[in-house]
Image (cartoon, rainbow, N blue to C red; front, side):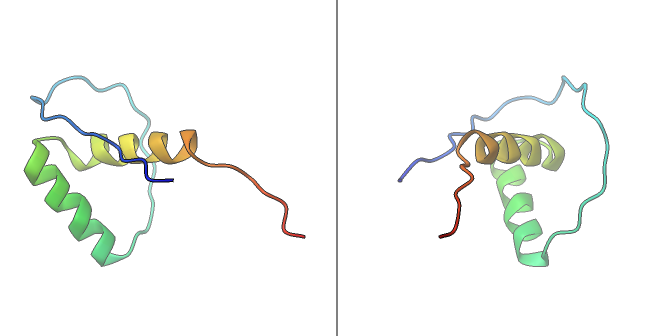
Length: 64
């Protein structure tokens, strides 16, 4: 599978999300920060987009 999440640049604005805490590795945070800088989106918005993409492209499989 060679799918990519395409992220467009946009101005800051809309919200409406729930707040929760999550621990991630520093290298992943650095990548999210770089993506935020490149796109003009907030880290929170990007993390939401990345989670939504991952959920839509996830499948539970049985290990046999």
